[in-house]
Image (tube, rainbow over all chains, first blue to last red; front, top):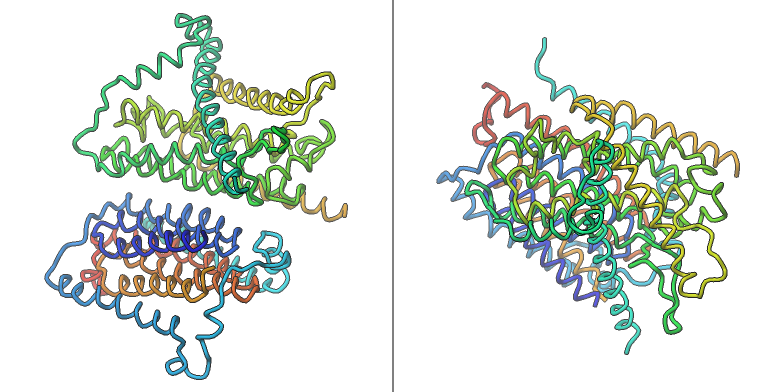
Length: 179
Length: 345
Length: 100
């Protein structure tokens, strides 16, 4: 059952990613990315990360992508033009996806003892992910909150400063030049 | 039959029952609104179709089904057809984590009156609300008309802004209850009226913020500028007719009902109420559902009362209110609640 | 059960689609979307490893990645709006000079 769900939603993810590359109008690319994020949220649930799945839907698919869709609707810049240069670029583009993905897949699936150097990737990677976990490391909000506010307190505070700077930057940039 | 098959069968029955009840509730909420707004405006509202106009929703439904489904030629078809379906699907999905009562025992098996009790129930509802913005934004975009686009953009900006205040107002309740699970939050308020989060938990500020944010999220007066007739023809659903328009309206009223359910669960003690002991066992199990429905009904009357009474906000007043008033108020509520809970422990 | 490597392969596929989109797309917003796709692929790897080694630090990292992605999206889109206002185009081949 878990395998069936994983393969179904992995197929939807990959289809969405390829569609993002293939579409010319940015709104279609944005919608494909939303589909990718939705299926990733389901895969996170399969991995036992329920809080992260909910946050992915609320923050990533529900706020960040809304921002993208807004800007696309506001600017209404239209489709990409098909210049001869872009056609040649895409002649190399799709094979590049296949080569890059194929290389990484080979490394992960067959053990990269020769490629990755001293770290044997094959053995531990073949064990299953998402197996039964004890209550201490279930992906609930309580456990993540505990980690966030004890071990990761400094990164947490620094990221809040980062968000503040981003807000100020966005406000300054979006203002029309009044001076 | 295996345990899994029985579980799936019970879940399907619950889903069917809830969807039917919800859609009937939506239809009669429209009737209630027309009657109440009519009386507020010193007129009758629907009276002709059936006693007190009670068959009016049936007549409306039939009319909408038989109306011509006009698809203008200039729209972007895939999104045009997808947007109302998305709105309605999401509005119906959020009902799946809402508990209606404790549990009833059928054939020796205790069935909880909730489709599924995930322990992130509240986050599921917030997530569904976040994705619901797309129904509005995409319908405005795909309709390819200036009224729709402006209405869609305004509505999505409003919904995203008030989502922040909505989420933060719920954090006070979460601090008091310690869990995201909706059933857990109701159980933390057990013990009578004084234990409700709004009274005993002193979350009345959070309740006020939640009310305002919920009005804005469901695009209801006084925050209904995006669909105001005098301003934008009909905003993001200008170019829709017949069943697609009906889907938008159903989604709006279903969202109202969901918001009422949430307010009852989080602030007003859920389904607590006196259960008289002389009733048979099945009626005793259904009494909490009655008390819950009573709260939802009163909430809907509040919604409709506000609609009939208040004028609408201008768009910049609306955004200023959301960001400059509700957000700081919600943050202050979180700080005070956490201080009190921390000092009490 | 699904082995860990399958999740990593999926993350790798998403990441490579993002890289290629970043290099070959001509629309500024599409390039931005490819960056978000790369970040999503990496998030998946984080969560998969968190599940594999039974440590929640991976999920906390995903939290931080999302916050940084949000901040970057906000500022980046503001920059894109500013670029569109001055140059009237979103094609990177045409906005490759500092001179207008």
